[in-house]
Image 1 (tube, rainbow, N blue to C red):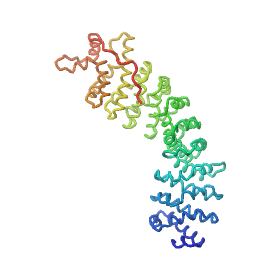
Image 2 (image 1 turned 45 degrees about the vertical axis):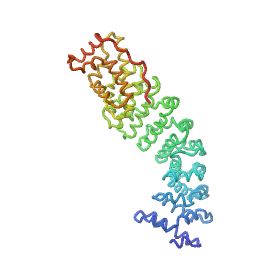
Image 3 (image 1 turned 30 degrees about the vertical axis):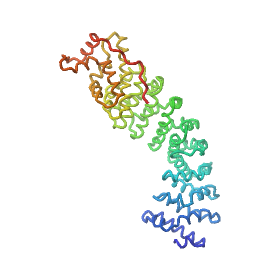
Image 4 (image 1 turned 180 degrees about the vertical axis):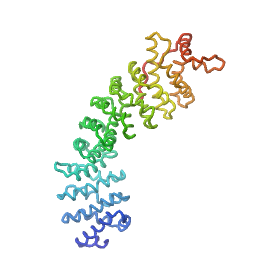
Length: 456
């Protein structure tokens, strides 16, 4: 076979190339390493330029496609095949074009070095030219997948993003799940890998359709869709507002409340968290969409990583909420699970939770004064649910910011209880009487600052 490949006879070359292709297609006969050692890759690369023999081009491209799907992709990328495969994207033969797309997609899917080689040889523009009306579905699937692979990672500055997004913004309307999924992953990669990628995606008009796709029945579609939307929610205030205006929160409520995969619920929590970091209007939109109750349920009952994302969402809403919004959060049962977050190991999350509790306690102090009461109801509940003990435990944490905020809360709202730690002082079995005594007999503490810093 090697002798035939290196012969000058076209018929022998074709016969041998077909034999190599069949060997590579037989999963029970793994011969890739033997073919690599036979040093025939440069010869197959040469065959790609034999325009007078399209069948030989086709078979050579097929061999290289299969080898590129193995552990030896880099050898294909470096044997001179990439520029010839890019050239074949303009072949008059549709089958050859399809095979070239497949080969380039396999190469780009490997390590970043391989992907960069494909990009450096200008594959994007001729690949985009493949998307045309009347395109067969199998070819469209392969082309969308290859385009998604090329978008993975950081795109070079010379690659124009707008033409890519013009194509992808059409592909996200496809009814084919394979095309739809790969198109959505491409958007996700662009958000991450392109300067101002989030804005480019929004400018392409993709947001309304992405939000609509949150109703898709397949988790294979929901995951890339919600991942793109989570990336957008990490943008600036104006970009987050686009999501709110497209009514994303009402689409998220079912995803949080029903039995969806963990990865989808985590992204949904992240989106709510990022929206809650914004204005009071955004927090009100979160409340109006009825996502607080399912978030609190997740915070109470889910696995640790989902609990953490839900904790961020509730903490951010609590940190920036108005007194009425705080009252709503407390009425939905946020205090006890938030206090449980104080035992987590993530220092940033614990601090965000403390900021949320600080704002809740401030709202309770205002409510106490307005009602002429001597008891801050929120401080009382935190005491009764064991939150005060958790706050006191945080005094031992080796984190200066957490320590200062904890001491501010303890001294501001539970000064009497902290003093009662002295064993020489009498104690009361009635926690409510303790709070009342602190309010009536002790000097009133200075209230914490009116508005805590928003957590990121």
